[in-house]
Length: 120
Length: 106
Image 1 (cartoon, each protein chain N blue to C red):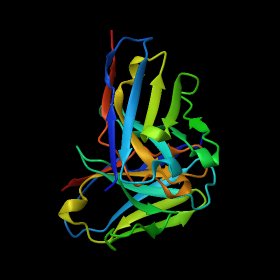
Image 2 (image 1 turned 60 degrees about the horizontal axis):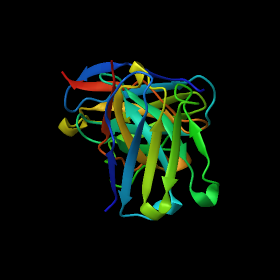
Image 3 (image 1 turned 30 degrees about the horizontal axis):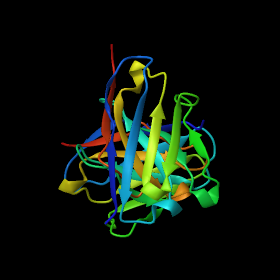
């Protein structure tokens, strides 16, 4: 069974940093592209960014609102995905979920998410 | 980035009704369009990819159509378990979601 479990969320001040983790199991993590998706309170889904598999170059792409502030990385030996968030803004407050990313075919598996609150 | 506009943002319908949700892209995305169902407290569920292909296990009352800039999700006969928020997502370029359509009980 595919499982994705996020951790690392919490309360952080504007301008601060936070690193989220996503522990994956039940599938061949190293072969799969992964994405982060967030949902702000009362708002819709927003794609944050993705990282390709090592065989596809392990490159990352980001949504415009987070580009230059967020960094996605992966550690295939630990089956773990990361999201490093710097220069956090109040508008980054959201539940962050990791997902499997099948490129044009969509996100088939999602974690339950971890809440990030950016507030002074 | 490609903008995705869904309409309506919410609708009220009864069990058995035919429901249609529309998604419009700011530029042509061919058929690179996915649909998700999201219920409160649960992970979103991928229903349809490539505009019209149902994922295995998704009830046949769901269907998708369209290409280019205009797309439609149709539920032919709404069931109690279908009350949820539905999102479209384009996968033609840097991914973007539509704003969502909340389907509520009338």
